[in-house]
Image (cartoon, rainbow, N blue to C red; front, side):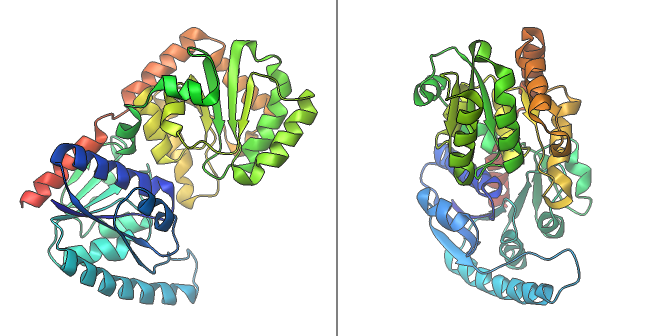
Length: 368
């Protein structure tokens, strides 16, 4: 098979595409890939590290208010369509899949104009602007949350697949997770993370929460600050606690996140779609603090989906304090019955075979 992947801007759009590529390789054997991303997005760094052939086009998103920048965006889109058509004609893919971000716009649109079968994947509970536009041209829209099918009334075919990133974590080793953290196997681990670059509000809440935790009560807290906040947060924690106790593990970044998730008992996190797919695939209860700085407040919508099913406690950033965070964590970790019930609810929401379902649909489209 020959597959074009496209998605960019953030890891939440990139990693699902990579998960689909790995599933295709596992099922099909050798596959010819081309990843078309943006010149400005994170994909220009991450995709080559995954050993996927990468080409870039220059594209930006629309501003949500009247601006001359939008005129330039339209011109970049048109140039991006032209460049994408050239790449697609040369590569001759069987299917094109877009996993979100502005770069998918010209790539998937160009494929549809050339008669190449297309699939777009929507990670969030509220569809993004690009995918809403593309749904009129794509052959299939795959959604991450059950019941989202009605969000794409103009699409020919909408299917519920979950998020392919869920499949990636299911084979991760908890033993390796414990070993990488230096924590004894079988320990209770509370993982606090604010995204790949960290979150100032969550960092501050963790600093305030640490004295409430006391001696950890047999629980290991793993706190991922993000590189920009690491030194200041570590210094503040040392001052608050008179040093860093052995139950508190402060890290700037985690490179083996699937393995660490596999050994995690409770996670405190933002509510990005890919992360939620991972934790539900593993059945991890969560305290979710949605970012208020995202388009259409989609992270809160994502988080509320888990909250309604009993898999998460949602704490809005405006209400976030060290004491509030400690209370939310204790509500779960301090009651084995509550933790077990939330874990079961989380696992019910997980779509562990998501990547396989997307690949199945790609195979069907290719056969056309």
